[in-house]
Image 1 (cartoon, one colour):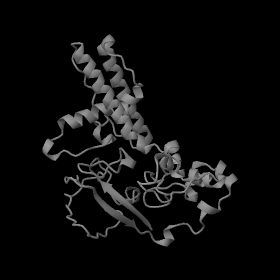
Image 2 (cartoon, rainbow, N blue to C red):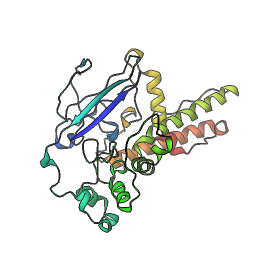
Image 3 (cartoon, rainbow, N blue to C red):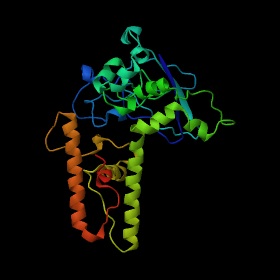
Image 4 (cartoon, rainbow, N blue to C red):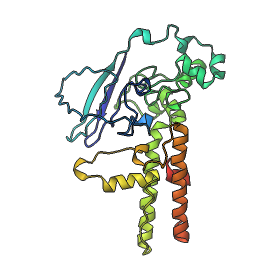
Length: 303
């Protein structure tokens, strides 16, 4: 059983279309044709053709029960107040391992375990199970995903330097109290999912600053290729219909399709990256001395 509180600030959208049991597609429960973007933790993967969604009106106090495989999304909070929900996920006991390896595996075995063994022992968390004080929420549950690698928490506990979360109060707690928590230190050291938005913000800031400088020098502003992630994001913002606009994080669904369909995910993502870097290099060659790219090229490609 897992409970969480989710708050949506005014003007904020909770999440795009997703399902809480993220392995459902791999078990044949969803289509595989190109369609709507999947959960942010599975960027680039898509659902098949979907029926029109149903808008649920839920006044305060409403309780909704649903299967974890149900596709759902949070709408934009158009009020001027915080909107929050409490979620509670229930998993049958037999889904869990009979042996609690998270507790019983020896520290020396844990220190040398492969990613595959850690996965089999249950050290690969995601939002529906095995989180440690919230760490693992952005995990995919797959082997090798740093966003769900809760072995770091167990190892910190074994060393005796894991600071558990206790009562936090605006009146008495300080920033240092929060920064000292074991889960916060582990998130900062190992989590990558929370940095994706920052990378897009940095790249967008670079583009805005570069174009401001070019305009001040009497030069035309530049537009990055739509085959790069920042170019695709700016194109989406500029071209999306205003009456139906929805915020969108960086995801491979924004990029133009590849010339050929590549089934292997690693090779497909690599093809997106190579195409983006080539387009950025071509742009640099066209502009010549007019453009000096200060940020690393992979950051601009974001692919």
